[in-house]
Image (cartoon, rainbow, N blue to C red):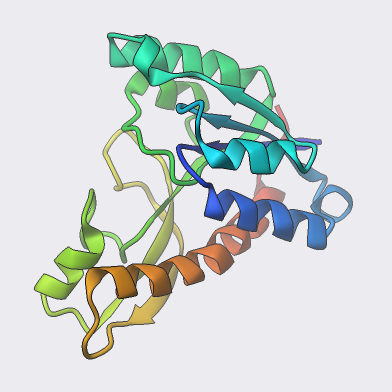
Length: 196
């Protein structure tokens, strides 16, 4: 079985979209894959309760208990590794990961970013797209590498920038496309991955 471990920091709307798609499409039977666990760096992340209510294992590694980022990442890597992941999926996980973590799961870790990478890596992507006068925005699923938001692109979704858009309106439209894009990208790459 190919285990998927999803990392979240909040409500986990992309996590929920992935779980619901996996259940609706019977990934366990059709792809030999399942969402094995949801892990958060924040104990109060509401997505944990959502996942737990659907019978998915959950774990917390609270980043506030660590003074060094590398120590947190080492503890997080141990927690994730306990579920023997074939794929690690960052879904609104709001921590920049160090080589300590990335090295453990190199070549089998995805992230979603709310811009059409390579445009606007980092934060405040929607406002930056508006400030630049972009006619299109969107989201990108990419492989995680050592350089922030710079790994190879797996898939993208394009959203038009509409007259009168502010950052909040654009964010809502982009996020609605993320919920389609992320499960689609995962579904496409799962057959290429071998269970550990």
